[in-house]
Amino acid sequence: MTLVSILSGAGISTDSGIPDYRGPNGLWRRDPEAEKLVTYDYYMNDPEIRRRSWRMRRTSSTWGAEPNAAHRAVAELERRPGVALRVITQNVDGLHQLAGMPARKVLELHGTARAVVCTGCDARSSMAAALARVDAGEEDPPCRVCGGILKSATVMFGQPLDPVVLAEAVAVARASEVFIAVGTSLRVQPAASLAGLAAEHGARLAIVNAEPTPYDELADTVVREPIGTALPALLAEL
Ligand code: ZN
Image 1 (cartoon, helix red, strand yellow):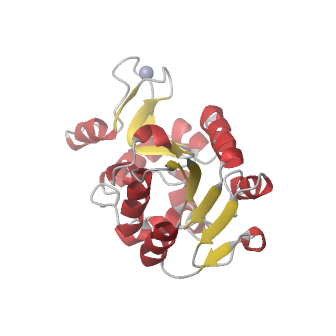
Image 2 (cartoon, rainbow, N blue to C red):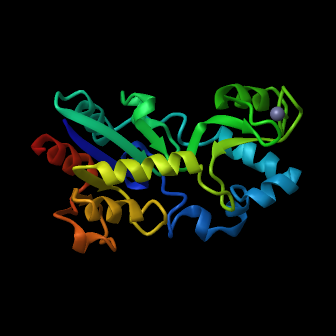
Image 3 (spheres, rainbow, N blue to C red):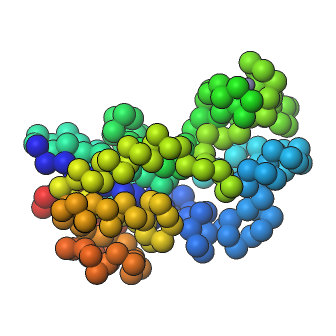
């Protein structure tokens, strides 16, 4: 068995029509008003921010998005004999799973937009059910269990990453024989450091990204071609 890890960032989903909100040049960094909608303190303390957040979620490009060739190539690799694959993703769109990756093999560092969580009692439920309530007229639907404030199950600005997910990602990076970073600038910590950690522990490191990254020097392979063609080709050669 060869343990292969793929760290994916926003670049893998742009072919699916999902813009990079979160990156250094993403919408949320360029527009302070938009950034408030995904900043924990503003969200918790201002009902108007929450109403605007729910309206934004209703129109998110995520709901109509389909996995693209890169997501499908990753899911195909998971089914190849002799390969043990883990995906570590900075994305919250769930497209790896929609492409066929088993959910237990996908570590979502920034959570998922497809679920909601109660900030009072931690109850989880589906985003689709919450959005149906918004459609029916609830502008800021409260938790049905405890009446608390609901939010998307994503990691907002000002919130820590889930320590369990992060610890698992670190363990996976250390154990990897092949580590492929795709569509990520490798500039947001701690996700970026996983690439360095994998290389330090002996993994072959490949980077597929349009722009240079701080880890290119450490990499065995650096590919700048578009992800939709470059990643399937790279995975076919493994
Ligand atoms: Zn609750």
